Length: 366
Image (tube, rainbow, N blue to C red):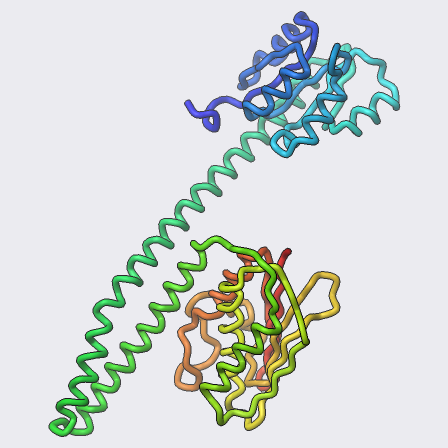
């Protein structure tokens, strides 16, 4: 039986064997496994080897007393979460109580011990341990399911690209080679087929990108976001030279992040800003940082904006707040941005109003 499916373990630590026997007898009716030791050093070794629901720890022990054991247990990330209850024959004084709590104990029991109180306290920690264990199992199962769904999505999206290429290619060939034999209606049908195939291709590419972002490790290094923004806007200008778009950007805004992933996020945000300002003869896009205590960056445009009532839908896949015949897109871009920001330990949100532009705020940890 694996340790995660076994009974919760209780660690008893006392240098007097008779005290250990007495404690174990008091806990006999609880659904748990009792592990006993007479040494503080051995207790620390056992804490590293097993998961315990709680440790009942004597204070007065030779070589290493209970306070020292508690300090060392709390100082180690692998053992600091184990609850500690001191069980001691010391007099119940304010000094002893404060020292016990200062060393990291959850509780202190002074002898003579009330058996009902001892069992009740231990039972609470057993139930908390089991609850944490069930929660972790659910989280692990959820992660496995998500990984399987991601793998399935990637596989399906990858396989769907194959039939789309000939669909678009043969339609183009028909138009080029037999266009003079087709009437306008037939040409319109073929153009619609090509357009649909291309839209589907873009959607599949975005789905693959969304799946890949969840798989690749985040490689953090210094990133100059101002330079990144400027280079992406320069590309947008090169592809659309007729547009007049003012870029406002600070000289340097550096973070520690994955350059490739952050470029994908900024490309999606800036392409949106470029797209939703194109009905303005002169547009403005701004990148900057707010004076808030938490490092918060933003990308702002003066485009068509959106109804703030729908802001909660923005970062879900396939959600579009504007008609496809007015603004092209697959509805995946902001979901990609959200995933990249979350993978950097940050969060993203937006503020807007119709015809009042949009501002996308985001944070990045580290």
